Amino acid sequence: MKRLCGLAFVVMAIAMPGCRSTNAIPASPLLHAKQIVAASLSDSFTTFSGSAQGNVTPATYDTSGTLLAPYGVSFDPSGNIWIGNCSGPNVLEFANGATGTTGPTNTITSASFVCPSDVFVAKSGKIYVTDYNAEAVDVFSAGATGLSTPIAQITGNVTGLAGPEGIAVDSSGNMWVVNYNNGLEEFAAGANGNVAPSVAINANIAVPAGVNLDSHGNIWVANHGGNNIVEFPANATNASTPIATITSSAISNPNAVAVDGAGYIYETGSGANSINVFAPGSGTNATPIRSISGASTDLNDNWGLAIR
Image (cartoon, rainbow, N blue to C red; front, side, top):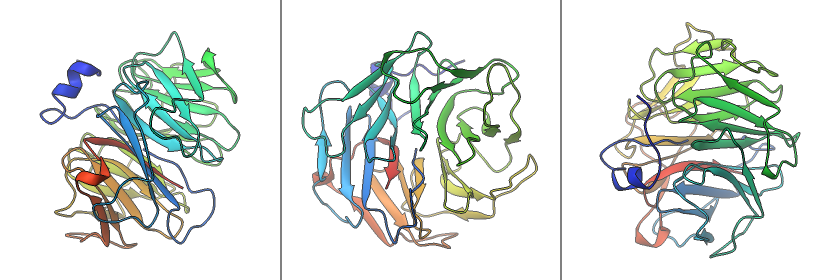
């Protein structure tokens, strides 16, 4: 049975995990992120400087009224912010630095959309969207705007898609997707239609919500049901097990993960209104090196996270 996203779900968000997801690969090696953006079920997104910590006011905070149950969020190569707007249902693009009631600069709608939950914009400009309730991955051409038809759509019983939430795309166009109901899958570049994934991993993953690729191509998963963050190798196969697992008392129902070029791991979730940063090599019972939390942050039931 599919989970219905939308305003009714917002009321129940604490009791039942929602649709969601992550993520942008840093464009170049970074000592730390320059910007952090989080989307939440308060129908808003917040951005912070990469070094923010504590009970700090966000650098930008958008409440334009166009955000309706936003889940996935990412930066494009130009620093613009893209959001999977589940109850729109649409995909929204905001200019870097958008604040208050600025509103989106671009809106993509599609006849196939039911609950767009995550979005990834590649360097080529192609736009990749997971749709939780349609159980599909839609790919749009660079520059898509308004009512658009996907140039490719992965959907059907052979795909194994079951509540696809987060998506990350490598430099070759291979797509890594986490399914809330069916683990981690990879689809080859150019995949279209009712096609089987090239990799499918279910072991050591429980209701995953977000996915990110680090600068080495390793795959990081926000493992919502397992209450941890797991890392798989870049050359993962169906039989792969995690090469790293981060547990922490600070992690609570993780929904999104991002990794910067220096290996620092950023996490947020719906169980705690915070963003936690872990040092490279963190493992069991890790302590964040810094956290963003408190009333001034406007963080509230976070489902999306991205860095640049």
